[in-house]
Amino acid sequence: MESGEAFDYGVNAGIRAAVAALRQSAAALELLLSCPVTSPALGHDSDPARLLADACLDGLSEVARVESRAAALKVHLTAEYVRLAEVVAGISSSPQECTAREMGTVAEIAGVLTVSERSAAALICEALSLTTSLPLTLGALRAGKVSWQHARIMVDEASSLSPAGATALESHFLDPDDSSPARGCYAGELVPGRFRAKARTWHERHHPDSIEARHTRGAADRRVEFHPDRDGMAWLSAYLPAVEAAGIFDRLTSASRALQGPDEPRTLAQLRADVAVTLLLADRSDGYVDGDAGPGIEGTASASTIGRAPVPRAQVLVTVPVLSLLGLTDEPATLDGFGPIPPSTARRLVADGADSFYRVLVDPRDGAPLEIGRTSYRIPKAMRQWLRLRDAKCSFPGCNNSSLVTEADHLLAWANGGTTGISNLGQPCRKHHRLRHTTAWQPTSATPQKPPEWVSPTGRRYRSEQQDWEPPLWPDFLSPFSGALLTKR
Image 1 (cartoon, one colour):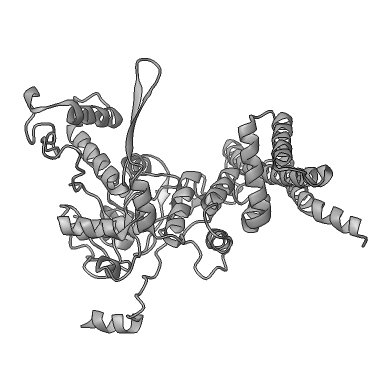
Image 2 (tube, one colour; image 1 turned 90 degrees about the vertical axis):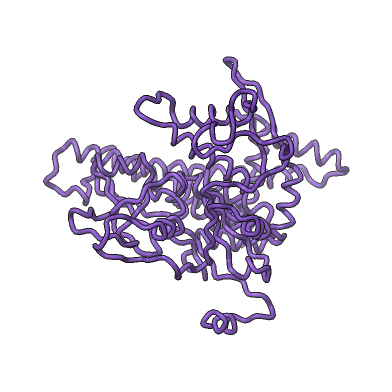
């Protein structure tokens, strides 16, 4: 093979593969449109309307793969154009000429795609990253296993990692043969928001810089911002340490839920806003004293505490590795509904006596009654806490409601012989709890480590998201073996 032919093959190999994948999806979609497929879940005796409805879902699934494969082709074409433009232009004579060429390349791609130059520049950056350092992600995109949103999240989370760290990140989520693959459903089966949360958690745990140092830098940028909006409205946002932000939001939620009732027309979101206004603007001259601003609210801060962030008095669950709690390691703690936080923050919560702090080891096997049979329908507090640890959020596919707003539910109804045990319990949010009891959507069985999956009315099964628990870190002077001996004592 001549050198020119080798160059041509190298340039076009990825594009050819992407085109082949796109043609495969197009052929499958054409087949679905011309001859609806009978769903195995529905069988051959189902009525034509149900068969056509199921074929529509199959078509939507294939369209999603077409979109992913088209995105992969766009990535290949963008990256190859950028590289070939550099070859055609030759070596730059100055930094200014190099910058001008880059601007011209961005402008060309923006014009072809009819997008802004900012969007074109972002596409170029993402395309180069995917084609040079994230081969598993690009392969999954080309195969239609992840969406373009998933691929962009992977690029974003890998951007601040070393090449080895980026490889480990995508291997964890996309390589089933990885030494510690992500638990639960495949990355592409998670909605992008949930995938970002899981990828960010892995990123925080494995970032080369200490989370303490990064948190200190981030805390220095804390602020409150005001942004005017239309219709006489405005946005008031606060950039805060996660523990304080979670505590504030939970107090607003708890107070708002307590105000709900048959005669309360306001939604939960509206109540949160009104409670926040009451807390921030009311003073003692308005008649508010401790306990009068609403259930769960102690009134406004006194002059001596203004500007100081109090320890949140809210139902915030924080999971702390025991050796990190003792200060022997710097392993992050985990804030329910958020992700990793600095261990110093968790130690402060313990020292300051946060009312609802529930301390749990990374492998929480002691202290929770996992199975109490049919001796009681009522679910004890310890078991509810275990559910929060196992699921972290509503287990319904794509739902992002945290365990703070979920409801314990018997998977096999108590009236049908179901037991009050961790393997027969789920914790859907109110919306999906109601969906379960008013439609044909049904959860499957669970285990002490795995939340229930869900089966739709069409028979499709949606796997549940699971938490990626990792073995705890051990300090250099203490081995796991000696730690086990200490535990047994």
